[in-house]
Amino acid sequence: MSDVIPKALLEATAKHPKGKDLVFQYGTAGFRLKANLLGSVVFRVGLLAALRSRKFNGQTIGVMITASHNPPEDNGVKLVDPMGDMLEGTWEQYATLLANAGNDEALVEAYEQVAEELKVNLNAPARVVFARDTRASGFTLAAALVDGLKALNVEYVDFKILTTPQLHYLVRCINTKGTHFEYGEPTEQGYYQKIATAFKNAMADKKPKGSVTVDCANGVGGPKLHEMIKYLPPGMLDIRVVNDDVLKPEALNVQCGADFVKTQQRPPPSSKAAPHERHASLDGDADRVVYYFLDRESNFRLLDGDRIATLAAGFLGNLVKLADLSDEITLGVVQTAYANGASTKYLTDVMKLPVVCTSTGVKHLHHAAQRFDIGIYFEANGHGTVLFSPDALKAIETRQPKSPHHASTLKILTAVTNLINQAVGDAISDMLLAEVILAHMEWKPENWLATYTDLPNRLVRVEVRDRTIFKATDSERRLESPKGAQDEIDKLAGKFCLGRSFARASGTEDAVRVYAEAATRGECDELARGVVMVVQKYGAL
Ligand code: G16
Image (cartoon, rainbow, N blue to C red; front, side, top):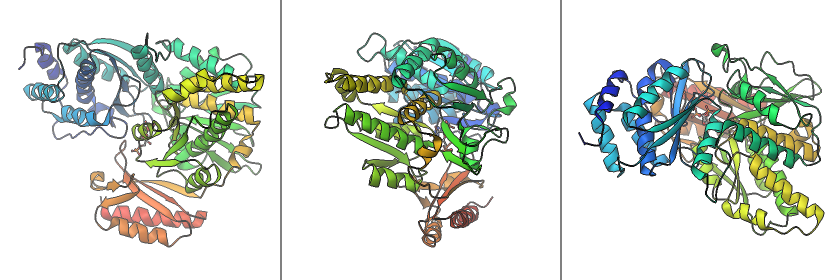
């Protein structure tokens, strides 16, 4: 064992032994599983966070303990990189390696191997900040993390209960403080102040019509949205917070929240929505948001992540044009295979924007969005944000106003860059952005919906014996294994007008997801049923 690894590490590993026969995988959003199996994983994530920080000579790394949209008994853990984005992809294998290493000396050896392979100076300082959502298991898991950090002499700050995007914000603020890229005050209050000020400036002299009711999935978004409201200019926006009971952790994501609304395509049973009212639903850690409303006939109408992307693209594209910056600023949209075909068609054919498709997981979308000056990325499930390149920010900042109208356009554009969380998708910030845009356009939800017509679609969760046999390719639009499955899916999809379907293994749940869309509801449901049967056949339990 190397001299620089404290004996404490060996002692600490004994407290968090890995269960026999368990295999862990750093998935779409870190590790996710039943909370009672997660202790050893969180402890080992602490070791990797220490290595990652030392690799960057003491820059702060974030660790978020959350299972977001998953059921209350699950939990999860993921790492946040110095600029507040997701852990760099090439390091995920090391997270998986440490999580699966044996106990005691075997773990220390794995740790040393990783440190050597990554050429980490183990004498460099290490700093980690962490937080958790409102799950009952979070407190104990945070203690396991602390054991790992202490054993490796890491300086750490426990931010206790936060939304995932708040932790990403803090990491970015801490690491950029005093630099040219300073992002904000590295405190929870700093987060509210920055977003509230930007909201006020972006709203300019507009006033949203009516109220917005926000379903917080009985998760951390509830208390944090209540807090945010205190910072917003009084009377500017009537926000009604519902499903904000965090004292009953068993209520988290149950029959409410963004995932429920999107997958079930109906309001939470507790909803008291009246026709034409705006409703938004957050997920369990407040990084996703979808809108919905009831139309005149009380039909449920969903305004999902695709809709937020098209709303933002239209508004920002227009602001860039009015600011006379179209020649300098490129704008593009990033989606996944789950994006409704009608939204992609609208973006390319009507809005004439470049659209890129990536695999599921914001880490993939984020990187693709960085290739544009303004990169708008949203998953259909409501997870996303808008990224502004340093060149775009500079162009906006240095453009000399030619008229009072031009000046106010530039002011709104600047405010929007501050309103949108540049680190990661943020439900609270995204919701306020949507409110700003609706107010400027003087749009009701009906106007937003009228921009294009979604193809009927269905998302089904299929339990299989071993989801890892379902290997996808082509931005997860096709299955390369099990052999033969994709041919059957293609044949089925070909039978229906505008039929499109795919199956992929979830990276956050032990299941395969099937997506289908087609010209009519009946065809879509038939296609979904057929593809579910294909998945069941190949993945027979
Ligand atoms: C996470 C990821 C999202 C992804 C979702 C579902 O969301 O951050 O990018 O869309 O899981 O992923 P999968 O289909 O692989 O299970 P969240 O909100 O749970 O963190």
